[in-house]
Length: 445
Image (spheres, rainbow, N blue to C red):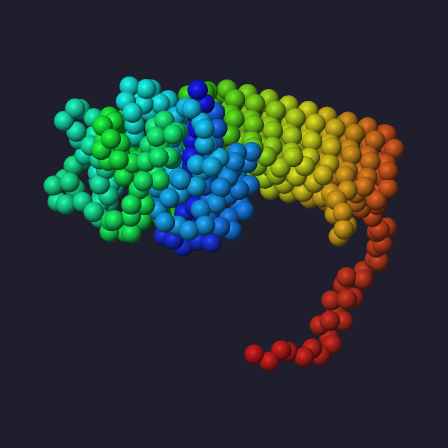
């Protein structure tokens, strides 16, 4: 039996006050939609994402899963029905979820499917501390549920019910689409509510049940404030997992992690470090304060920071050092190599044991294309060196401080690329005397 999930992602996010579709707003470095897809991929065989018109970013984020467009926003029931042509004939269960409920876990979705096997329809519910304007899940005398009533359509007694609708419904596909086609829009919003499928199922003698889940997992995100609260909750979980895995976070609340951050054992992370997506840190690494890492790998025993920036495509080798105010981009820094101060190294391969002096930069862009710099093993690069790519420095080469290097340096060669120094004895004293005696025009205030 094939199991499918329909993810409703057509919302504009009006309360976000953003041109970005609501489901594309990120949490821990990836869009809300991708969080939900990741949970569904562990449970469902097929996934269909319902988007709105002119939302190409959502279609790209949904890939490789199918998408369908809800051209007229006539409610959640109407949105779910747009996926029917892609799932017609499916013999298994179909679940409908909302992309702005991105924190639901695969474990909870598995419980939902198990509950559906013992009933004709199952849905997720929660008991939030503040029920606010959530739809209420009304009980049935058989121990299941009778229907869902939206807050705006509920009376005072119904609003007093503490069990609230999360918005996730699961039923056999053929029945679900039949119920969706029979919906009416006789309600305060004039919309076709997905939640009305519960009453439709009951009217035909089918049994419906609710599966309760934690509020933190089921929170809906409709505003920037709710997005920030979800981010804080996810970050807390990521930090706890990192520390449980053997990493030390000196000031945990100040560290920002991404959904895919990988920290090894005996890693130490200083305050105010940011891990953007795509970072792997191996064992016994120290990441010092105020560093920013993205799309990079830091090998065992390396030291990074403080105030370092590692950009995508960078690999810091075992026991290598990246110091303060050093930026690496698409660079391999070899084992034991050091770039300790104030340098930019981009599109480069730096050999093991090489020392990069303070103020060194690679000129990797000529205004039209990027070029690579290759530096061999055991090279010494003096302070304030400028390496103009494309360029190769052989093993054991020595670059004098202040040099601009534009041509290949042979192994074990010493390269100077700076103007000859001249010295004029006594000229400084003469110059000062001339300046003092010459009438100077003072600037008008």
